[in-house]
Image (cartoon, rainbow, N blue to C red; front, side, top):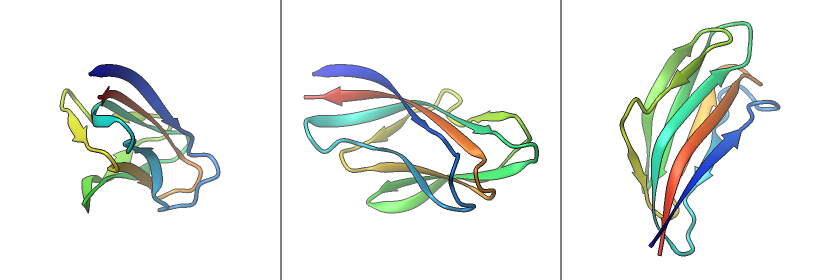
Length: 112
């Protein structure tokens, strides 16, 4: 098995308010699992926003809802925790404000 570290970056420019943005979908070819090791959300506006994080893994669940992020600040969700994603699982984010939320997802893909 091979382990590959990656960053998945999603620019929040040109996004609508409350629109779910798919940051990452676990590969369905030769992927055993993905370990999420970091998730940073950055507010790119001059006003506070709120953000949601969802995991689509058989069911749609909130990992966090209505996180307040002050103007020009960032929020680190993981805080030492890990999330295991299986093939086909998707991680999504949303902001209550259009064009406001940049996202960096750090992962380790385990392939067979």
